[in-house]
Image (cartoon, rainbow, N blue to C red; front, side, top):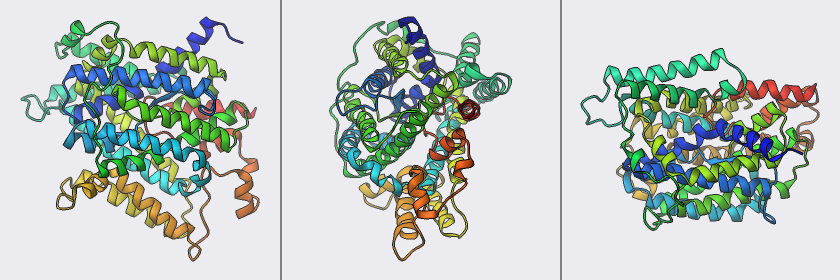
Length: 483
């Protein structure tokens, strides 16, 4: 057993690891919705507050809700591109409405989702995650240039210089340091970049002085949610992706802490995820999901206590009650965010490519799935007006890269790999070994270390770019389980 001080220390370490990832979605979506800095600050604090509540629910559990495993919950990155597509046209109210409905759907589906996760193999999840990262890159580039295309200094060498400097700092820290410092490279890079910008007079923290130090989250601050069919359909697709990722995280952390994880436990974890997602819009936040970099941290530190992670959840709740924290985050210069965003979003694309490396390419069918999903997914990036002549509901679905990629990948995977007249169903990256052996015979998996099996079993979470060095650190730490 750990004492209160130790639990708080270990919990704070978890929060530092994921902090950059949890504040990024509110900043991106708030910018897309053209919110003023004070409102973006509210989105940030709401995200911290909901992430804390979700973490407490996941780790401690209430009845059939919560996996009771050391999993940190945060604002999901998988939903960002879809929310940006909605918010940039119609504001936040339809975003919140779509999240509520999708969250309710997720709560209902959680009971049987573990049984249908086979329909989301690596070829599907890898395609979607890759498109998520690619869809977010234009946002990073816009930030690098200054954010406001009508401003005189938009694209100036000064703005791009700050972005490049931040990027360089992150790269150097990632290369020169290991362990905790390396995992905090993006957060450190943003702090140093902001400090340099402040010294040279390129920051505006005027909102900090007017922000309250302590205040409860505001309910429905942005107005009552509205419900648009197209937005809801898109968000339901996103929720299915989030549930797939959370399932992978639950399985991975269960193996690390050597705890049995069955369908009931997976369902309990998904209920916590989706319950938090359903409630989040009321406070001004977005879908929640387990953060994969914290799974790696559990293995790296050897601290497997769920109560340590619960202590981190308590820290997040406290931060969510401090509006001044949100005001400080909202004051970070956009070029600095852009420099961090290049790595943050690029790492999402990289993790998608890594997932696709596990796909069977013996024939061309899976290649076709990836090609079509990626092709349709990048249409909103390459030609944003492509679907303008179509009905609004159709444009919302196909105008989001993640929705277009998800729909096409799932449908084509069913057609090519699941229907009886097609090839054999592909093995899900989450399927149990017994199922795989029953379908494909004995494999070489018994000779593969635990660390590699965990890495192969789950795709990296799309929203945890807060630590691009986690992959190496996690792989090294997980190998220690084999010795």
